[in-house]
Image (cartoon, rainbow, N blue to C red; front, side):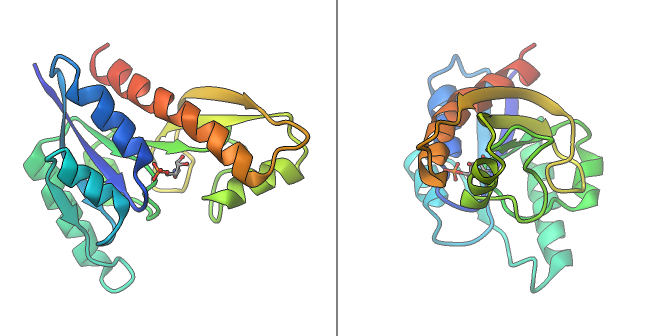
Length: 193
Ligand code: GRF
């Protein structure tokens, strides 16, 4: 039976692209039902259009949290998704959604959780914190999503050495390459065990 995923993104969507690349050429056992974008104009939407994947743009959760939640819930229900994949989605997932898809919402984070996660730990902040902590190893983690930032169980990780001359930018680039390999691999492992 075909498995369906929805991808949620807030920015460039390079991880979304990795999922498009992995699943549009697979035998079709996993399909991307749609993209849920946190705002208009983000690059992830262009990627969806190119791949002919439907997109829903959410209203701002700052203006109307209830509407944001209801629209997301309705869309995921309509698409009948087996798995929700957060790929650079910056808002917290409402508890009603976490409860409706138990162990079926995952996120990718650009560090080795449980360290370097939580509020404020996004973008270059994460890599800057890793460098300032003098870590010699970093990487990325795919984890289940709970109602708190970056706190669900870790499913899998990939590792990258932190070199003396690494900056937050160089580290981010190296880790992103690993993210693009890890995320589709984990999606496949969850849906096609
Ligand atoms: C990635 O580093 C991911 O780990 C984090 O947000 C970033 C999204 O990048 N959650 P992209 O939009 O997939 O290029």
